[in-house]
Amino acid sequence: MKKLLLLGDEAIAQGAIDAGLSGVFAYPGTPSTEITEYIRASQEAKNKGIVAEWSANEKTAMETALGMSYAGKKAMVCMKHVGLNVAADAFMNAAITGSHGGLVVVSADDPSMHSSQNEQDSRFFGKFAQIPVLEPSNQQEAYNMTYYSFLLSEKLGTPVLMRITTRLAHSRSGVIRKEILPQNNLSLPSDLKQFVLLPSIARKQYNTLISKQRIFEQESTESGHNHFIEGKDKSMGIIACGISYNYLLENYTQQTIPYPVLKISQYPVEKTLVKKLYDEVESILILEEGYPILEELIRGLLDEGKKIKGRMDGTLPRTGELNPNYVAKALGMNYEEGYDIPKTLKARPPVLCDGCSHWDSYYALNEALEPYSKGRVLSDIGCYTLGALPPLNAINSCVDMGASITMAIGAAEAGLVPAVAVIGDSTFTHSGMTGLLDAVNRKVPITVMLLDNSTTAMTGGQDSPGFGHLESIIKGLGVEEEHIRIIKPLRRHHEENVAIIKEEISYNGVSVVIPRRECVQTLAKRMKLKHAKDKMQKESQSSKK
Image (tube, rainbow, N blue to C red; front, side, top):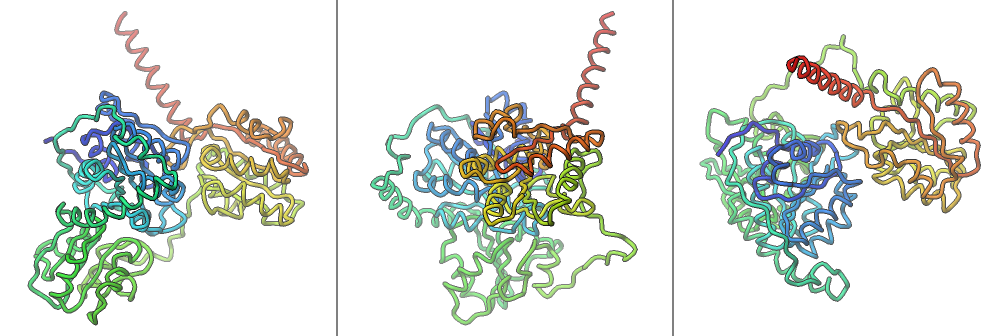
C-alpha cells in the first residue's frame, strides 16, 4: 500500500479514514488539532462524504460522535487532555451505553505543559471509564492502532480511548497504509433501549461493562500491541509504555537491548504478562510518559521484595516529558546533556503578535481600571492570556475554559467590585455562555470584556462558533441591550474606548464590552488568498484574450 510521511496526528487521521470513518468531531486544542485539520483538508475524505466539524466544545463533540455511533456509523472525537475533562460526563456514560458503530476517542496529552495548564494523564480516564486504551509508540503504530481501534470498538461494543502525547503528535515518520474499508451503512442498535440510561437499564449495562473486563485484558494480550522481548541480562527487566519504548530504542540504535523488555501499548494489561517479567528478573525499570500509573499498579500487585524503579522513586523525573537522555540515565548509560545556554542570551517569552487587537483592548482596560486597586481582572484561555506578562500585566487568572466569567461572579459576590472578566469569542461559546447566564440571573455587578477577533486564533485560526451571532446570544441570555457595547480596538479610538469601559465598569449590573477586530494572522492569510485568486483570475482573462 501507499507510504506517506505523516505527523502522528496525521497518521491517526489517515488511519481513521482508511478504517471507514464517517465523521470526526472536535474542539481545537494543541497537540490534537492537526487530526481534524488533516481530515477537513483531505480530498479523499471529501470524496467519501466524511463529516469533519469543529464543535462548540469537547462535550458537544463527544455527544455528536456518540450519536453517529448510535446510528451505526464509525465516529471519532478528538481533543487535548484537558478537553477530556469537559467531555467527561458523556465520555464516562458512553462506556456504559457502549457503542454501536465504532467509536474512538483521541486524547492528546501535553507532558511538560508546552501549551496547557496541567500534565494530566488520559490513561486515568480510560481506567476510570473501564474501557480499552491504546497508546502508540510511533507514527506507524498510531495509524495501525487507530484502524484497529474501530474494529475493536465494533467487536466489543465499547468506545476505545487512544492516548497520545505532544512528541508523537508533532513528529513525522513514514506510514504504510492498510486496506481501505468502506463506511458502515445506517443502522440502529438491536436493543433500542441500549442508550437509555435510566437507573434500571444503566445497572444492567454497567454489569455488562464489568463482565467485559476480562475480555478487554485478553484482547490486550492477543492483539500484539503488548509483547514480551527476551533479553539475556536478567539483572533488570524493563516495562516501556507507549512512546517511552521509542526513547528506549534510541539508546540502543547499534545493538540489541540486553534486558528483557515488556512493551505495553494497550490497556488494561493482563497481570500474567507482567508477572512473567517480574519472575525472571532481579529488578524492574518502568518507563511511562505521564503519571506513574502502571508503576503504581505493579507496586500494588507484585510488591514481593524486588526493586521497582521509575518515576515514584526518583529514577526518572516525576514531572515533565521523558526523553532518551532521562532513559539513558536510568539505565546507567553515558549520554549527552547538550550545551548550557550562554548567559549573554536573554529569555524571549511569548508575546502577542504585532498589530494584535488585544494590545489596544488591554491598554484601554488598564487605563479604565487605574482608579481601582490591582487584581480585578479574571481571564480565560486563549492568545489573550499573554496579557498576564509584561508590559501589559493586565490579567490575574487563567484556570480553565470559561472560568473568567464565573470567577468574576465569585469575586464580585465576595465584595471585589468592580470585577472584570476577559474572554475570547471562541472560549465564550465553548463554556462562557452558562456563566454569563448565572451572572444575569443573580444580577451580579461584573463587566465582561469579550475579545472578538472572529476566530479560534491560538490553535491556528479555526472558525469561531459564535461568529456573527455574539450580540444576539448575549441579548438572549438576558444582558440589557444598552449594556452590550461594541468598540473598535485601535489606538486612534483609545480615548473613546476607555470612556466606554469606564461607564460599564461603574454600572451596577451585568455589562458586556466587545472589542471587535479581526485577528491579524487570519487577516494576512485571507488577504494573501484573495491576492492569489485575483492574480489567477487576471491571468485567466489575459490568456482568453
